[in-house]
Image 1 (cartoon, rainbow, N blue to C red):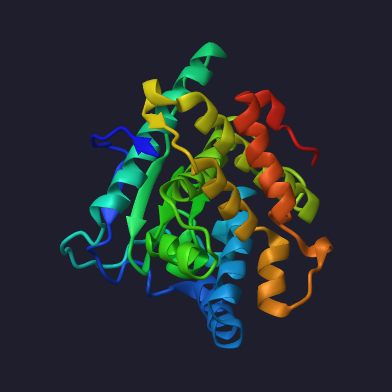
Image 2: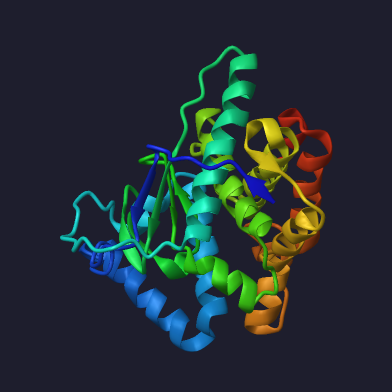
Length: 286
């Protein structure tokens, strides 16, 4: 995968800071910290990722701030050198730049103006508009401050533990979170049903939106797909399907508890966006 370079004022690198999210203030933060510790000790990284996926579902539907107690203040941080590698910076900034071009054009064609999200890369923990963020939550979008939060070590885990390596797999994850931002601009986040079915519909649409981006970006908008890239994306979609994660964490799949969709559903959604390049084809029932 080839991505255009350059900087982006909407990208913030906090990977050289420390202490930003490690103190979970308030009763909500303490509750989440307790749950986090129990899950970590019992189920390891897979359980923590499942917990993070549940948090992503809450923030997608506008409920993350309540769970973590709001996160209205900021904790002291120590500024240091960036821990982003050149490759991580290339994927994060390049993907963000490309999504801005694609969605900017789509919104313009619809007679609207696209307001891009911010992206914050951090190490271990930081503060978000939805409360304290921790790496084990995985990447997530916070509607309160219209920002995407990501600890780039998630990509290492995606590669080593889940067998989904590759730069396009990483770009798909970023584009999925941008998809949640697009949903927010469209008024599709919050205020609706909090059922698992509704959460799955939101997540599948974000997967489809990620495919739309990849279909429309191409070389003139900062993206050139190369042989094997689509397969990388499909492996990533399969790896983070609810059934895949549940099977690895507990050995049992419970479909009625899905919040993001099965591996097959996520692959279908990504492929739908890739094959059509049409966001109107990404409407899933809620």
